[in-house]
Length: 203
Image 1: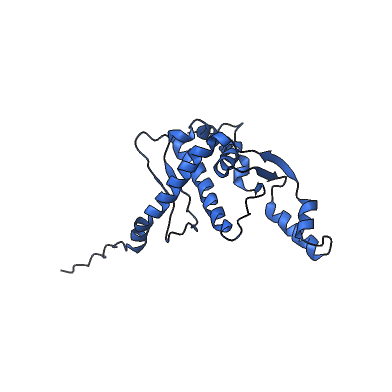
Image 2: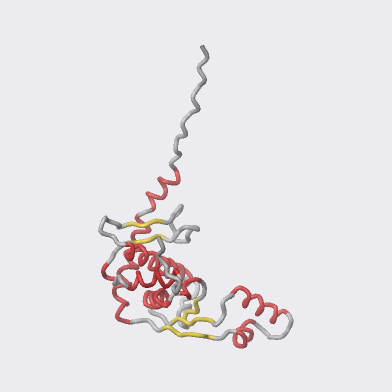
């Protein structure tokens, strides 16, 4: 079955699904811990919680979008324990999320902060070039390199009317992560039994 037409990307398809669900219409939660997590809960893994027979595909995709945003917000809160002013400036964002206007707006709404998109596809390559420029003496430091090499292509403002619902959903996400600690521990500590090979019977 073809779900994406020739004129659309998978991001376009997923974003259309997400846009069909209002944030207050679903409490489905997604833990985006496929590659591990610094959520503060040992052995945490990815998964959904809150699904029922009524849960739609659109709600699952929206939960994935939200879960990634919430995980990033959790990371930033930890960084704020080191530097409380980390969110004083706009957030510069990169990666796959920049392929979806819907996801970017959700990110801005969850953080209630302005986003800035850098006009470059390969951010790692840009960073390497900046480091090379500093080491070669082209720029005196990384601040100067950034001033000369980083260009903002787009600015996304948060929607203040979405602050309340996303605050509720983020708190629900954090509480549910903590409540899953015993579940994840049981999964990690359970050793599944492998059937013994049948013994050969010789007559």
